[in-house]
Amino acid sequence: LQDIEQAERIAAGRDPDIYAQKGLMLHQMKDFNRALKDFQRTVAHDPSNASNWNYVGLCMAQLGNLGEAFIAYKKAVKLDPNFKEAIGNLAQLHRENGDGPTALKVFDRALGVDPSYVAGWHLRGLCSHGLGQTVQALSDFSRGLGVDPCHLACLNFRGICYQSLGAFKDANESYNALLRIDPTNICFYSREMALYYWARLDLPINRFNPDRDTHVYFKEAHCKRTNPRDLPNYTMQPSKVGVKQIGVNDRPPSNKNGGSNTTNTDHFQRLIEAADRLGGWIQLDAPGFLSNKRQHRQFGLAVIEMAQVVRAHWKKLREGDTSAKLAWRDVFDIAVRWRQVSEPNDPVWWIDQLAPEAFEEGFGLQTPLVNGQLRVIRYYPYFDQAFTLMKELVVKSSGVQGSAASEVRKIESIDQLYQAWGKGDFWVVSPCHSCIPGSDVIMEGTRLTIQAHAPNGYDFTIRTPGKPDRWKQYEDEFDYLWSKLEAQQADAILNNTDDGSLPDEIRDTVLQIFFYWVNFGPLSRGSASCGYAMLMALYVALGYTMQDPLPKGIQMDWEAILRPTPTVFINHVRRWLKPAAHNQADPLVELAPVSDTLPTLRHYMMALNAKHTS
Image (tube, rainbow, N blue to C red; front, side, top):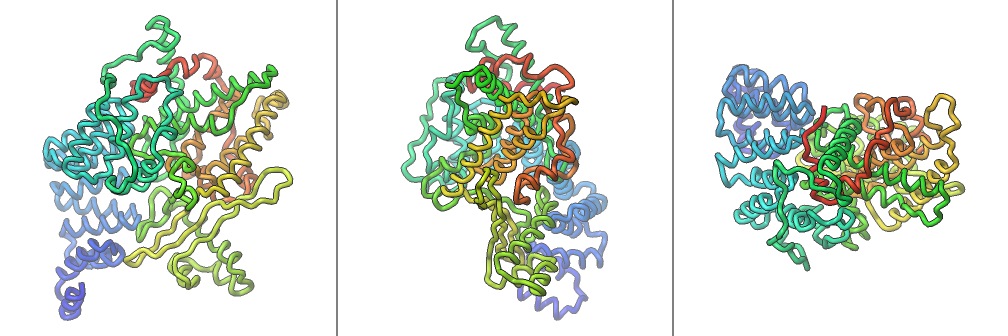
């Protein structure tokens, strides 16, 4: 880089190729801001260079400037209609922006230019997978492997697709093919879980408990994606499994109560249709979120099963059954199980069930708003709110007052705040106030963190460490709220509203449960989606549902995380979150219990993969 900069000084702007060479080097160093300036100089000198426009697009995309990236890629493709890499980058940008259908069409255009474009098949497969089109994704990855049988990413995701479909033998073969090429590949963890699932495919679903059965150090390594050779004291899953895998054309087997095939099929189909009706509510209308039909299905199935279990429990309580016990964690466990089964690429574990050392150290979630120089598409819309909160917490924690505090509040960039702090990487803690009557406990909400990230960037993240003392505080909140909700429904205060709307007392208790759950963040992945599932399930159990989707740009978990009390959160969301009484038949009334319709893991997976209803 120093040599190129020396040549740049000598040329004094007379050789634009130097800017292109320097831009390439800076791009490889991930210094996208500086690389962008050099590529912009090259296209200013020669606007007809498609390659340089492509690099302008890459830099813009990697900085999170999607609009400018779209313009640059389109200029590159207009200059060279057969520029498959630029077409592929344009398709990938549509995917990252959450527009899956357009992305697939543009990927097809790139592959039409060159059907042997392996990276195109891989990226198209990722897009299909992100849309919940598992069979199509499997085809895409297989097409890529037809060109390059040793393409590691295609081998990995072909295994993931087979595993999602319940074709565990085929998944195992794909993972093993990859591990023969690279014995340290993290697909080792997916293979082990595939073998675990396969061996339990026909066991009763209540005996399927990966958190209980899986080695704690395996789970920690799975989350951290560490070299599997470094995994201590782990006994691998048996490689020979005498259980028939699920075939593409398999029909749901009889349920545990027997009955005719017609009856079983009817119950199964009604459940699928109800799940698809409810499941779409989880879709966020925000940049970066693909409409994943598979995840919609699992969300709807989880909501129905959770709501049925909760409603049955409440019925026992109203009938005076003092032996009836159902803990809040039992209900969340249903959502966790559906999340684990639906997406085998994600390590979804309860954090308190990881290795004890990891739990003591505070293993937890980390979500970036800014990663180096990249503004993360999904979460950057909450940057202003999070950054304003962080500045206020810096003022409070440092004790500055008067004009000094005003100067902190005026800071406009991460770099300025980092320099003003002057002590290197740092974090501040957002407060999360207890709702237990008489309690003055202020729990640790989330840690707003800034870390320097070479070259010339910062990581701005939220982190939720799952430490034992913090865990106990949140458990106390849930124990209180769960008992409160049981008492509220038992008092039948649902009859106290004239217009049939959900009484404020119950609505607010359900929202409090959601608020503390997403601040708690007790799972290694999927905490937000499981929180949404509990929110919807409790409303459905009470006889209500969401009639309208969340407003454009709203992510309810972020709305909760960035507010200190459930009251502030509830006052904010109640303007647009209005559960309404079912305008048709109660979706639970017409359904057999999920535990009867889907009694085994095989049934679970067939429900996830059944044809989607309109």
